[in-house]
Length: 241
Length: 186
Ligand SMILES: [Fe+2]
Ligand SMILES: [Fe+2]
View 1 (cartoon, each protein chain N blue to C red):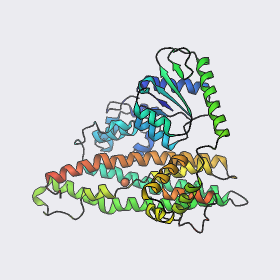
View 2: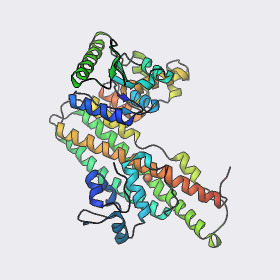
View 3: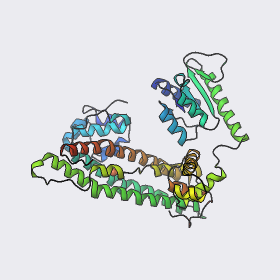
């Protein structure tokens, strides 16, 4: 797979891996964008091209991240992207899977109790994911943005060590993908008959996608956001040991 | 599972196996950590490992830790007379024959003995308690085990079922009639 640069034609990149469509959607780029390079679309949409290139490549290649220089873009950009992704999970992907699961459960006559268990599990999972995301949106991201602001304008900021630091986030940040993997696994191996085979196919495919996407999302939080904030904290002498 | 340090061998072998149209899923691993992870979380029937791992202690630990599935070593040279070897220059027909034979043997073994996938009685109890919301410590106390033993059971359960979370085990327990939906706190 070729690495994407600002010179890469966006359509060519997406034809190589169509899942990138979901990624650029979070930058408000939709199909019909024309014959443009990555750099050109970034300019047009006012997106930091360095950031865009990092996100696209990290999506294609898991090992792309650690080697890359992270200083080139702002945390504001990064947080905006993470929020868009959250929005996508909560308002599109999860409701879509829920709808498929609902259909799976209601389609069987007589009722298959095994399917109801799957539905319960997924509902519990959704609550957990929602809590995870809300915590980040309400506590972590405001803190992260505040730190960047303080870093950029040290003279006009308050002093003192905050109660919540990125260290707290690092300890509390749990893995939300594991349960999804279990659900997929259970459906593939232990789902009791009878059920609509085609629907189960579609659900497992969507779960697979969501898991991969969440993985990618968490990696950005853990491998980019945390180190970047920590660097700023150190500079601002906010680290408690 | 294909375990090789060579990117070209991994992808090449995968293509060859894909061409054989076998009803199996193919996993690729470039190192032992990945291989172990895949091995623990999936039902691996056959391992094709690069020659470079033949003297590796970690590799031997991996292949002796689990159920008796097939292992092939993949080498650059034809090593005649050794059933357990695949080589870089074998023909598709030779490859197909060896792989199919090995997958077949695996199946027969599974039918004859109790498959290792089956949970032991103790493990079933542990699953049941976990599904009811017990912690590792609770389980150790209830079943009169050391915490270490309880953890070992838990690890074996993960290996056998591929289910890692307590919530996942709960679903498994309900689907298998070990607890009822009402008993579970899902
Ligand atoms: Fe997040
Ligand atoms: Fe997160």
